[in-house]
Image 1 (cartoon, rainbow, N blue to C red):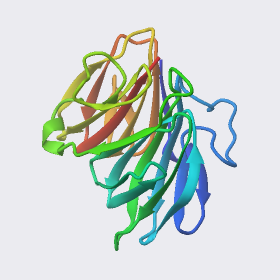
Image 2 (cartoon, rainbow, N blue to C red; image 1 turned 60 degrees about the horizontal axis):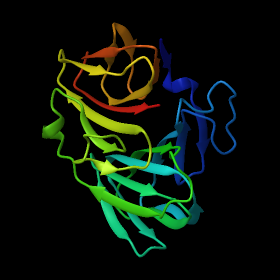
Image 3 (cartoon, rainbow, N blue to C red; image 1 turned 90 degrees about the vertical axis):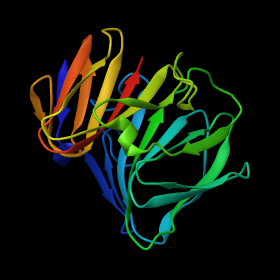
Length: 232
């Protein structure tokens, strides 16, 4: 099954400083058909105005992955962690028993990012945070695991879920295959560029819900950048 969810169909909330699109039910956006996809609970497409951002607020028992598309985001939390994550890079916050954090765009330009929440396998774990760069050249023509809680993905940022977050960049006309497995689900979004997934057309920032497939073949119709989440 491949279900394309057009960008125009996503939930929306514009707060002035934050222009957010919601792939799944979030805050005031409610759609009973789009609550989660397996353990994937939230995929927000956020644009944050310069010198604004999320004031300190709490989370618990959620794996929160931030994929920065343009600009940069600066993080501070109640554990004393601080960091700046730039475009193309990833940060992971394991909320565990509880953490308070802020996410600010301290840049002079708009920051755009994907905020992805995955339900952890266990509740009540110790909270944590980490970030790392993933040079886009390393993703050329293939999917690279950015964050994972699965065996064999030790080079990725760790998350506490039977899931992985992958990224790829494809030149126009280039294709890549990715194993999914019929017992798992996947959700894919091209950050830029038109693509096809098993021959089905997908526009930039559309969501693609995938299930009951052994694998997918992604073909770039333009130069494209893709983020994919693989979950149980």
